[in-house]
Length: 81
Ligand SMILES: [Zn+2]
Image (cartoon, rainbow, N blue to C red):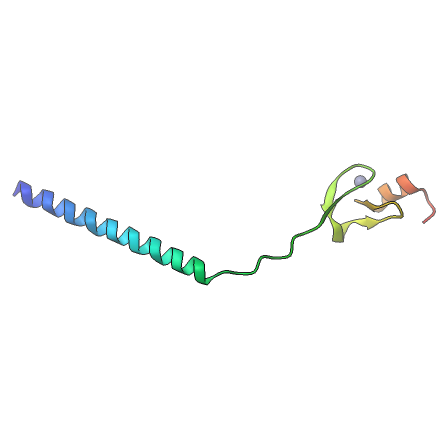
């Protein structure tokens, strides 16, 4: 009876091991299938006044470069422009 229990534990353990391997193989297969193109990288720029990094699309363009906000552009480049 004791050996039967040991045998049952081995069988269950082997079954779980097989299940794990099957799941692992499926995960790898689906990972290969679902290759999505990477999104375009966001270009980051640093504010010339305070050095804050922000996406280029959100930056305020000045004559000398990019700024995080209109106030910093004005402080750096003056009212004109
Ligand atoms: Zn700034």
